[in-house]
Length: 354
Length: 68
Image (spheres, each protein chain N blue to C red):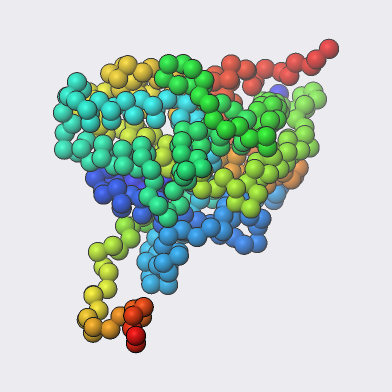
């Protein structure tokens, strides 16, 4: 959400970084209150993620005109966005950055603009969220924010982050029995089938191996499993908080922002900036960070579209591989980078077990 | 051999249009791009709170010793 709050890069982002942390927290609360709320679709679906009221709704701000002029029908990124960005190790690296600046001057003295960024980042993402807000997902019951994120990823995708503790020990967190254990296999089969359709779409000679019915069935299976984890609004708050959190760090690295300047990490791309910062604090970023950054937005859009059921109808499936459509561009990016980060080629034919 | 693509069926057009709409909702700013006004966020009016009410000396919440 923070990239959307900024509205422009770099000027909007610079203004955003200078706000008071309470204002930033209020914007997050506002985005929750203004979320898409189509009561005609099931609770948990992208157009109806939750019925829980945010702080402003509870205080009657809408009736008082407090929502006037704001965007409506707000949707935030899919949880997969947070998973992808976090895999770069950006959260741990910036934790060390803050640790260095608040406890000494080894990295220099932050300039005035970076002072705002440091204060906001520490206040928003490295301490208890303010009580009664939609972000307040830690408690005596679940005090560890890192563990809550890992638990969310495990439940939704049955995927682990590619890093454990700083000393490489595995991170322990509560694992749920109810997890989408077939998500990866189903999603990869979906990508392979769509890839076959993409390379066959203009080919008129010979048999066309495109199987629209199978693609629709796989999209439907993905939809069912993702929405199963979201029943009655489950995981919506976590998704809202974690995608916002990762978007803050993503925005920070999308340009030569104040903290990037202070760290003398200017570079032409997010991953190059992250690599330089990581080097300065002695905690390596993931070597495939470029792929994690590049896949995060398109895979978020595709999974939300799947949850909405856009491709569960056989007749609509060609939308995924029609050369003039936006979905095929996203699918192409996802196939490329998923192959890189998983080490499994989504463009290779399926190997049948003998 | 390749050929031109025939007109798209309505279901495909609708799915692509719905995806385009979703992409607009989830759009993020690009470097130097103009951001649409209907997706621009404004800070809640914290500073525009109503004037404090004059103190009449009466509490809306009855004190427990009142009338004792």
